[in-house]
Length: 606
Image 1 (cartoon, rainbow, N blue to C red):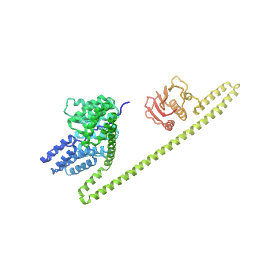
Image 2: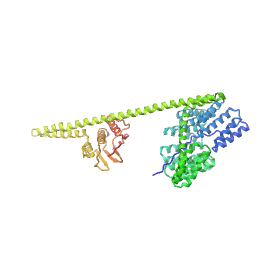
Image 3: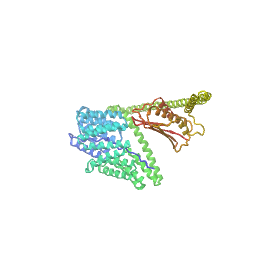
């Protein structure tokens, strides 16, 4: 059995901090450059502190806006989304009084990616489109390509894969025109992630290999791109079960993460390698790597990785029979995981509320004094209680609707079952009457006039046989001991030179299908054969019925004229109804001049 690994998506809608363009005091410049250095090594608290000091040493609204924006990016990277929204808003307010289209576009781009992280996809698109408008005004191809890439990520999160691919390829086209190698490679990475999600692993490999090939002779260039590529290659190989290849690429990613000093990626890749070692039963190495990952993440407040790393440690201790430590780390994992779930909920709330809440909070913070701080806290608490009550009411309404809908569906299914049962009862009654009364009287008349008119007598006998056949088709009930194949044989057309019907039963032809499944399958096949004779113009038709692992599989296929668009008629709707009653699934495939296929599988216990 293939081992299942936890998945960590490596998204490439990253927010890069903005380098200072000059125009400040020496103290401002010194603090700003130190902040950049701390940021690049994932030391976000130190970077935030230096940017605050830089703000205190400048009167430039542009420089302040830039620092606020970068502080917001640090808070976003440490999952402190309320603070990130707050500083993005401060940056937006600071830039209102200056004419800087580039910075305004950058702020909207970052708010858009933050909305993306918090699940506010509609707002994310709004801000990204605003960013795109600013960037198109300046005809900045590189930044236009970057925003298109982020718009593609929004669609990827919404599982609109074709739209995502369209945005990614628009971005790629722009980057190729301006020969932006970094941008081209970032598009390849995102297209690789998209193809991996689609399950088209070879295409994903092709995109990742393009990145690796381009970076081959540029050992010290594009380190971040190479890092993301190696991590995604490791993830892809692991999904494919190629553990040794995954090990190679996670090790390559770890080397680059160490080289650029990214503590988050160092911790992540150590944990991935620990899981691979765990798979190889190298428990000592797995424990060492996972403990290092947890320690590094804990020291640097990289909260989102802690839950996963503690789980790896707990699993490793369990494998080496150290149950005391296994229990300790499993308990820690559960606590961290619960906190992570709370964080996810808080992310969603922040995504819905940020536009008015952060602005309102900023204005109130400026006006508040020591005397009204308590009042502010009570007001905030009251608001959260209101939101909680409102959210609970909405949840109850949704739950009520779901229960009502399920009840309605149950009633619908019960009505459908009773309708079909009544229909079958009536068909059986008519069939028995036709067989016993009408066919019997016709045959009696035939014998009575045999001497006077032999030809008419023979015609009446033929008619009687046809009437009996019709009565058998009406009465689809399988009698005790009767094989299902015998009933199906009654509805198969007579052999004709240009028409061939083949019926195959598995595991053998002696299968018996109990009611109500037998009568429903009989009627489904009857309707398929009727449609075939009416419309298909097929000369080869195969029907396969298979009993396997508590399921009945019915596969129908003909080589007829097919249909460009399939619209189920009255008879085919009955097929859908019968499949629904049996709690099965049906799939229809057809196209012009390429025949007609129907695949049905139904739960069944003999």
